[in-house]
Image (tube, rainbow, N blue to C red):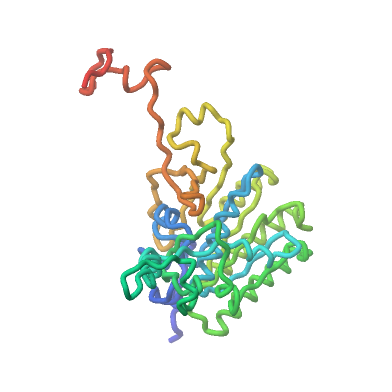
Amino acid sequence: MAATKTRTSSFSRNFSAVPSSRTPGLKNGPNGTVFVSSGIPDLDKILGGGFPLGSLVMVMEDSDAPHHMLLLRNFMSQGLVHNQPLLYASPAKEPRSFLGTLPSPSTSKDDKTRDHDVGQLSENGLRIAWQYKKYFGEQPTSDHQNVKLEYCNEFDLRKPQDRHFLNGQRIECISLRECSNMSTLLDHCSTFLSQRQESNTTCAGRIAIQSFCSPQCHFSDLDWDMLSFIRSLKSIIRASNAVAVLSFPASLLSSSFSKRWQHLADTLLSVRAIQDEDKELAKLLTGYQDMIGLLNVHKVARFNTQVPVILDATTFSMKLQKRRFLVLECLNQAPVDGSSGSSYGTTGSCSGSSKTGSLDF
């Protein structure tokens, strides 16, 4: 009797070849899902663990600000820290130069404390200034030795990635300008994924495509060809141990094609810039002066289940903590002054009575 073939549905994938979560950079999730980190700790928590292996993540760009670059940089940097193969495609002439802008992972507090304490006290118990440590034969240590290998690191956006992570890595960069048609770009992606399977690589791969339908690309006006490419990319990603993140300027697409693209995404995000002098928005939100943009979560990938994900919030503020680390926070409404209109301060008592009057605590 012939062996029965396992059937797969639209919401399930074959996990027989999925690497174990013991591999650095991977984490087990519900229903047999394996996650890779987005490079942003807050985003991993929002999505329930990160980006599932075999998923297509799409980010809608904002034409007023390149906030999508923050998501791509952290996503790519996290893969390099975990020694995961990377394929990066960009409309720039020299996409490899973008690797020099990737942020570096921050060192752990324990390592910082240990390095700060070593050599501080001499034999007589005197403190030695850091400027004079080089005269006492101390060997300098590189930053990558102090990096703690975690599932998701915090990345310092003001500090470039150490060359240790860029050298010896399997990094492939492609210029979208050199791709005359969609078949060329799809062949690069297929070759990248097939090489990993032939070499029996156990770690996950990452594909990052920036500004897919930008005017610099020769195929920017081929709407149906680009749609077919996204559909093909999703199919080959679903059958591999990789995650693809594709950003595109939605404003350059027609409404019908933009909806088709969004429907193909497993995880759909969008970023939006905030005006510097939006007084109305500043009155409504607390911490408005610290925000650099807004992140919207439109869809969350779910594999091997038909239960949808219901988030407590779908819009989050993007902030730079200490001007270095990207953090996401829920939007908090600012208190409304009673003199400017109706608010909780003028609607009645704390017991919910319908009588009007000021609150007296």
